[in-house]
Length: 224
View 1 (cartoon, rainbow, N blue to C red):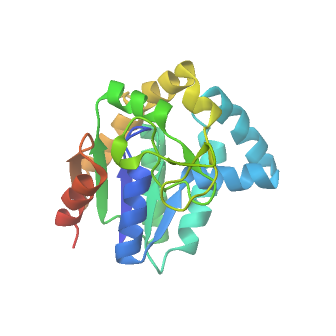
View 2: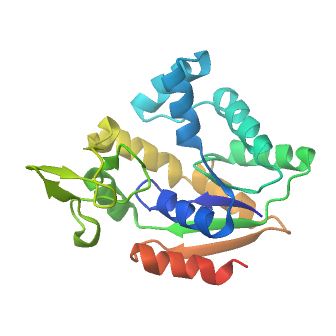
C-alpha cells in the first residue's frame, strides 16, 4: 500500500504517519528526513537544500525530486507513506509521472485540514526530541507537554533531549512555508487538488484541529 500525506506545518502529519507506519508495516518516508540526511552527510545536494530550508523557501525540484524518487524506489516492494512531498503543483505532476513510469500505484492520499493560525501557534510551541522527531512535545498543549527533569524539559515519551528548530521560532519563515502550503494555484494545495482529481486515487480528508487520537481514528476508519 502506497500513501501520500498532506497537511500544513504544525498539523501533526508526521505523528500520524508514524502511527500508520506502525499499523501497516510500511516505510514512513519524510522529505525533511531525506534532506537532513544529505545535509548531515555534507553532500552537494544537501548543502544546496540547506540554504533554501534556512530561508523558509521551497527547495527546487532539481534538488528534491532525485532524492525522493531514489528513496521511494527502495521501498517499492514493502510499500510507503510519503510525507512532505510534493509541495507544489509542478512536483505533484512530476511525482505522478514518475510513479507511473516506475509501475508504482498511489493508493491513498491523506489530507489533514487545519486553520492557518492554529498551525502557526502549534509550530512555535513544539519541541523536537533528539531520539525521535515524531514524539509529540508541545509547551502549549497539556496532553503533550514535555516533562520536567532536573530543572529542564525533556521528551514526555522517552525522556530525550529537546530542542527547537530555529525556523520554528521565526515568524517570517513560518509565513513563507505556509504561503507555499496554502497556495491553491501553484503551491501545495494545488498539489492536493491535483491528486484529488486523479480517477484511481482515494482521498481521505480529516479535521486536524482534533487531538492526535481523534485524527488517527478518523484516518484509520477510511484505510483498509
